[in-house]
Image 1 (cartoon, each protein chain N blue to C red):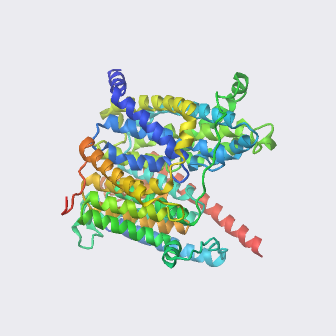
Image 2: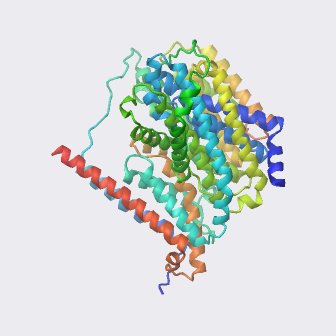
Image 3: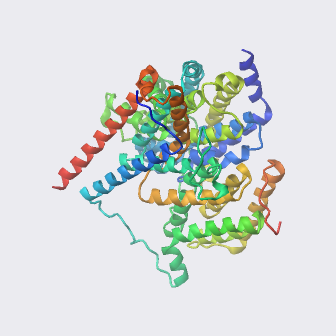
Amino acid sequence: MNDVLHGFMEVLQFYPLLLIFLGVVVGIIFGAMPGLSATMAVTLFLPLTFGMLPVHGLSLLLGLFIGGISGGLITAILINIPGTPSSIATTFDGYPMTLNGQAGKALGVGIVFSFLGGLVSFIALMFLAPQISNFALRFSPIDYFAVTTFSLTLIASMAGTSLIKGLLSGFIGLCIALIGSAPIDGTVRFTFGFNQFDGGLNLIAVLIGIFAIPEIIKSSRRSVKHDVELVMDVEKIRGFGFSIKEFITQIPNLIRSSLIGLGIGILPGIGGGTSNNISYLAAKNSSKHPEKYGTGIIDGVIASETANNASIGGALIPLLTLGIPGDPVTAVLLGGLMIHGITPGPMFMISNASLFYSIFLALIIGNIFMLVTEFFGIKGFVRMLKIPKQYLYPVIVVLCAVGAFGSTNRVFNIFAMLICGVIGYLLDKYRFPLTPIILSYILGPLVEANLRRGLMFSDGSFFAFFKSPIAAVFLGLAVVSLLASGMREIRKVLKLRAARV
Amino acid sequence: MVVTTVGPDFMPKLVAVGMALFSCLLIFKSLQIPTVSSEQSGDRVHGNNSFADFLRTHIDLVTIVLLFLYAIGIATVGFLISTIIYLVVHINLMGMNKKQNLIVSLIVSIVMAFGVYLLFTKVLYVMLPSGFLG
């Protein structure tokens, strides 16, 4: 109880509250701006938190997370361009509603249900995380190896359209992770004699390089070749625009969508970017009038926006209890925590109990700020979207450079960031998904360290990995997830071949 | 009992085998289904300036080179000067199709460079590279 109070008091001060507010506002702008995402917002602002207390830094980053996921609905509804992948399904019904003259209603519904989806998931985080943590405390290195391996297979198979490319991206991430000292014995690998490589590539440099630099190169191209001006009209919008009765009829949709969002958030490697589509499909399939979906009904907007915000709390659960990031943003948050010397994992709830409650309260407050600022400030946000791109992106590059440099005060990091960025750009150009790179870069060393630790315990016997029930279950799941996506891939190839003949 | 020695060479080998395997699969798959080329080059803007045309057609490469020059600048002449120069160049590059005011871009660059510099060094206490010119 003492931890709860202490954790809450840490957040209920002027400075952290201000940071949450700023985070939400900036996050919404990043979310709404096509090409900028919640991941990018959190990555870019991570360097700002280096000098802050952990609670203050996390307040800012969580605010950005919430704002960034939610902000995408503005452009999705008003101009049919999802601001982030989290809002793709919002365009399906949101934009038709705008065409039908119901933009205000669509925005109101989207904002309120974003808030509710987030709320459900934060409460789930509050109650589930301690339980999972307790369970995970019993994990041996062998179990840990199995869980991380399972996450790796899931990431590679779920992210992106092609299984092979997803897996290859994952392997590239592992390659980047191999540079530097090996876990356990500290053998130096792949440094080619350069001392700069001894510690491995800096996490922040890799994150910024992979997530931000390809986007900057692409936007540079867009602005020179064909720049789309955003034209939006929001002068007539006021109120949430829907009735209590409509709200009550949407409660089953709310529950289903939040659970889908939460569940997908918990699964490692996939977050809001996937959950909104799945939730939309689920809502459509279980609806009495599926034919109305896509014509502009609030059900579709609700399914998408509830699920993407519910994924926030979901993604934080494996991060805080197992140290496994649930989506790209939590991968960046993991980096942020590690810079402050905090290692998320089963011990987190014990050694940093008050910080856990601070995180919970910061999420709840951030969610409320999101509701209020989006409601009252929608016109302001739309105006912000008119910042000329040619000023915005170069300034982002400067922040990237500062971020890469600032984490360890080495100019070398800036070059590491750029090289990762070029690799990311080339992979993105040939349609390799980028998320598996980051997640396997983070999880790879964990897998290796736990594998070797586990083998030390078992005197080098691999049989021990199947004796532990937890490990056996997760290794089994890893095989199943790989086989399932392998089958899907083969079926796809066969279908394409059949279609060609 | 199977006793194996898993040393620091295990993961690199595993990764190498995995990459080789899946790379072969990818090649095999591409041979099976030739993808329809979706390259579009029809939207190229033809100006009367050959240098502008060069920038437009090689914009990705130009951007990458610019970013590396900026990094080299940070390493040699320091953060402030290289940031100002970089910002002016990239802003004008990205705004080359619009009526881009050079003076405005210069003012924005100087204000942003000093703003970021002061924010990080004075408010957030993050050191920035100073180079030999300070």
